[in-house]
Length: 277
Image 1 (cartoon, one colour):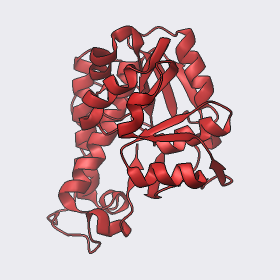
Image 2 (cartoon, helix red, strand yellow):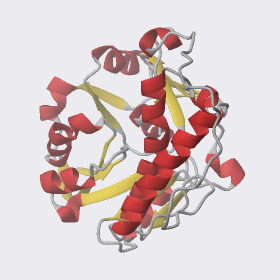
Image 3 (cartoon, rainbow, N blue to C red):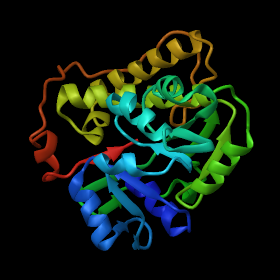
Image 4 (cartoon, rainbow, N blue to C red):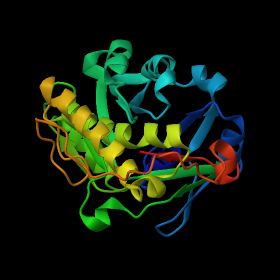
């Protein structure tokens, strides 16, 4: 995701520096740029790129540090990014899960901004080439990016961040970071665990009554927890969350034991992984 966002920002004229632990990626960007394809016109961006071990040489004058690492890397990535901020700089958690408190603890609450992303899938198949697999949300009126302050203010900096990200896709500033974050967690919770446990893809799960039933109940339970905690949980997909009992969903009497013939993990995509959010 960082390669995709950073490439668009670089093309738009922003001074972008990638810090990446994947050595081949850094070398490819420095040698020939990064190619960005589908579902838009392809282009090549030429941001700066440095290896992780070279990051200590970077100056402490960056306006924005966008962290796009996996959640388990947040605890070391956030302070690494924060130490290179300028006096008014801030760290953006452009991640799934609940990493904003970790970023705030590492960088300071006043230097942390959350960014929720939905309905966007990006693949980095090989060094120096990033591809988007889904149509742009802006083409259907959906804002992919929701930038928010931890305290719910619509500040000048989250407005500026949303405006910057609008060159990538639809973007807005939100006064409901925690509710938006929880809604995205509900979406992830209803799909990702079911795929991991069953070995089936999204389309296969949704084609089965039992698969739909499990997914819907997971979303309902996740939404109820968020509402009980006091979050203003917006729509999960097209459906607003409501307190109360889980929906009754008709299911097949056939046990849900079918395994996909498709190999799982890296072999399923020929060594290529999608970063979906």
